[in-house]
Length: 336
Image (cartoon, rainbow, N blue to C red; front, top):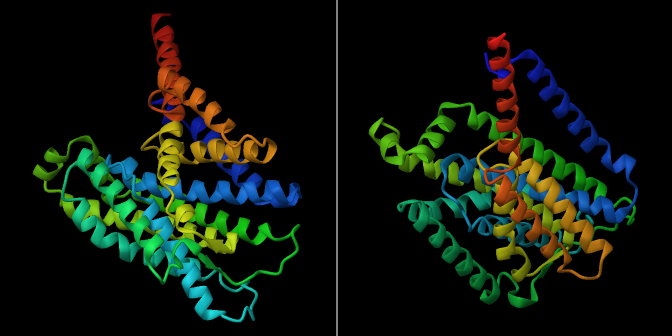
């Protein structure tokens, strides 16, 4: 019996999840500073995006550097639909959270034809294609009339007090995180998830064993777009205005990929840990210091340490150390 399967390990893991969930639930109650509450909202948005991104890229091995397409599609869906539903700002934007679901659906619709084209190639070419598709969508957003071009789009104004403004967004973001984690866990433990992992380990062998590789990859890719699209819609509603360079931002793709690699690529907990640590740190440093590039310097040093000493991510590193201690303990007991 491995240490991972022992009742003690399961109890400790359950306790950690419960404490983390309780702290996340009570955060707006315990922290009344509006700036920190907004940091919490951004952290939840990136946690949901990283978890969903990892559900496809981490499990299949196909690194998607065009996830910003889903994020931007969700944001523009929210902007266009909300302007149509509430053109006179009669509802104050407060009843538009449901449009986040529509943003997720729109992201899936856009992801389907992209996946049909991009997933015909293997992993390294797939990375290049997703980057090219991303910049294509960015150019469309900049030049198209329905997106407002470089002038962007303004959403219905939400007349909430500053001290309360971020709280509803926080809990909607938390619901998205919970949804992304549950979905990712279900996928990983399902036959579908095992097929994705088989593709990551050896795609040709998986194909030889009867896995419908093309269909499985496309399904995972489209599923991953849903949560990212919802998060894009939530971001647009939170900001109240969107511009192409911010919702179709290449730094978004790089950020969520780095969060997953930092925490543990292909693990369930890794993207959560990476997003919470990196996004909250980035937002905090931006708020505290006028030098907007300071966090880039610190992140560079942090990633250098991780690459040198924990190349598979923090979660995998901790698991390996725990297994080594367990093996040494077993060996010592056997020698007695």
